[in-house]
Image 1 (cartoon, one colour):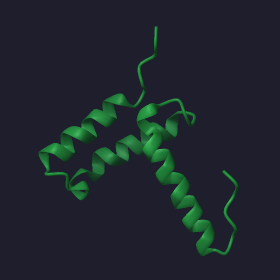
Image 2: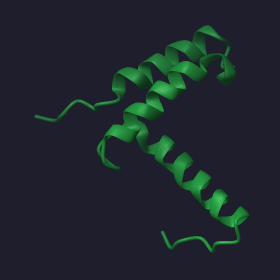
Image 3: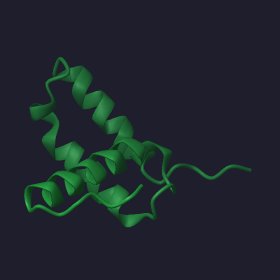
Length: 75
């Protein structure tokens, strides 16, 4: 029996919000933030729904490090 994705509810809320707001992300910032919080509660790879948010976080960390002159860490 497969386990339910722990952040699936938040992912569905994002889809509903985006559809209701003609895919304008700025109008769904609250539900996007809830998804980020959910993803932060679980180890990487635990939630398939979080894969895009985990990539976003890695890119944000790489950008921060680059702006401080720190070379990127190997993936």
